[in-house]
Image: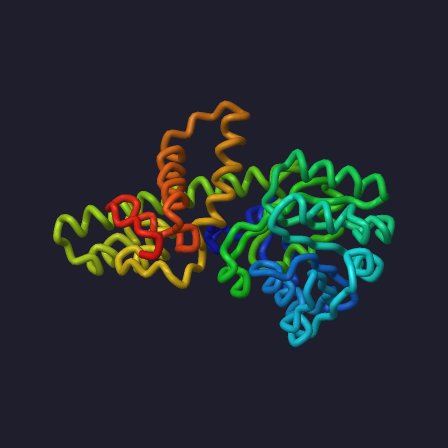
Length: 326
């Protein structure tokens, strides 16, 4: 999770729009990449909409997950029998998986991509996992004459199809160049984050802000409610004010009405990243008092069995309404 404003597009040399790197001729991406085959490992809540976006931009998509994906087939993609089969057929690999064990399995497992990786293949690894562990997987790929980028995506599953999620690509510059058109087609803007691992660190910053802003928005709405103010009027008044934020604007209506389900951004998904941020900020010695307060509230939500609810339900932690199914 995490949200990057679509207004922050195409900063010179760094942030790139959905049409790829800076182009004055505005040529359609589809005319340039129709022969590129992208192998997508992981077709879950994020992987499937990414695969659909790639198909929409003219890429041939080969997917793999342990169970067949009829949704990918109906969208125009094809299914590989194993990660090794996928690597043998794809020009570029992309994975977005729940944890490091899943990443290791698809890369270096008995039927992993390393069994048939073609020299020069770039693997765009988008999972939000420990950087040191991901670097070990990268080293294996490089030993097989390929390369692996750390490129997590910031945004909820609902933000991928409208191309509002941002990708943070980090690793060797030449490898990023080789897959720039793929990065441009994944969702919204993408940024060259720097050396390997910087992508994860960008996402940590984005999610630190998301957690703190969400708690602040919930706290403000709760105080307005206690004051007896018209909450809809409060929302409208602050939406475009200096006190507003994208989180206030997007999450305010849910916070106001306490509509926690369905959850476009579940607490449990955010919490996994908050745990990584907590470990990283201790590693680098950064003092984060506001983050610490926000994480404690989300820790409390998890402890009360509320991980399936939307992140905006943190209002209940502030007001004491903390039943597991509120």
